[in-house]
Length: 232
Image (cartoon, rainbow, N blue to C red; front, side):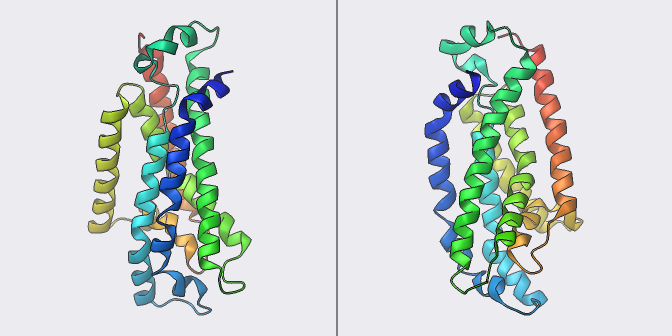
């Protein structure tokens, strides 16, 4: 019942985020197409040019989980269903897991559609992008944004949607600027890691994915602590 309730409350937002996600793919890939289809190892100049043309895509998609996160966690903003939901014989952990889980499923589903769109966008040359490339990109995108998603979950436990949205967008833009300006180890640059599967050798960014999952776990634990201590 909680899953169905969460779907009813977020279905229009999910649809909007789906349209928001698919629209810029063709524009973003126009500059990186030649590199994704080339048969030789990219030169540093080619790689830098392609990453600049698609670099904003990772930042753009990092905003999506922030807006889908937190469904069913801030009950204070929905008084019509607050008393009913909190009167159910379930724990705050289950409430958080159900709310965050439904949003995460929507997020990875949207990224699956995005990955298919990328595949079609880069696949006008036979064999240019394989199904394994598609899966690699989807996994990197889904796992790479998990830290952003659980940041949204944490913020949703004590902020309303409007404030959370502005803080999230400015935070993502600032982080992108910071990682582009200050030299950091490659695994810490989650934006580059999310786009790296689009280019040869199409490998998994294992280190960045692990860091993202670690950050997501810490933020998820913090969100649970806030929910357990709040009085609604």
